[in-house]
Structures are given as C-alpha cells and as structure tokens.
Length: 145
Image (cartoon, rainbow, N blue to C red):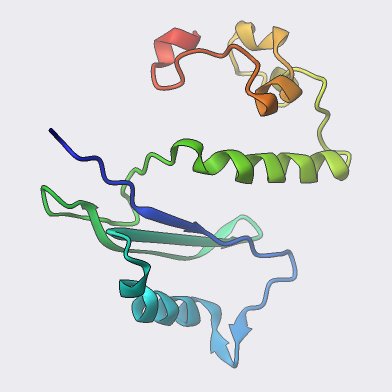
C-alpha cells in the first residue's frame, strides 16, 4: 500500500507595512537562515515556504522530500495537495475583505469571477464558506462543469 506524504506548508502573512529587514538582515536571507536552522526540528518530511509582499513573491524555498518512498525532493515547483489546511486561511482572507467592504457574502461568486460556470450563479459566497454549496467534484473538473 502506498503511503501519501503531505509535506508541511508554511504560509506567512506579511502586512502591507512589511519589514524588509530583521535585525539589519534582509528578509529573504533571514527566512532562508531560519528554514535551514530549524527544518530538522520540525519532523516534517518536507517543508515549503513562500512569502509575498504586495502581491510579489519575495522569498520561496523548499526543503526535504515530496515523496519519501520514491526519494523525490520537494521543490518550489512541487504541487502540494493542501486538503483542508487552506480552509481557515481562505475564510480569514475572505472575512477581511468583507470587513473592508470589498466582498459580500450573500452574492454569487460569479459576481467576482464571471468566468465560473453558470452553475455557480445559484451559490452564494456564504454557502461556499459554510461548505453548504453542493459544489461537487473539486478534484474532477468535468464534475463541476
């Protein structure tokens, strides 16, 4: 039986007034040093970190393995299945946009992403956040079209 490896993924929110230096060390060099020093103690088979400031990636690095059994290294280009890990992060971001008045919970996601299939017209943002939308087959594009 094949064991699935879920590498650790670290997402670091950086505020709009993000520091570019920590203790006079440029942020990317500081993050690289932290990852190199602390990776082993995480007990994760792989660790990936990406940091963006003002929609620009300022640091990206991956360490360890994407697949232990086949000895595949984790890279910054590796595709990682995050499963439910992204739900609270997405919810936090969406609620921040609601607080800023940039997004409404009781409208279709098509208001913001008109390229979505017609099916999404009857779904609200609130239902998506509550996991009550009935959107089926996220892993199979044909199932949602």
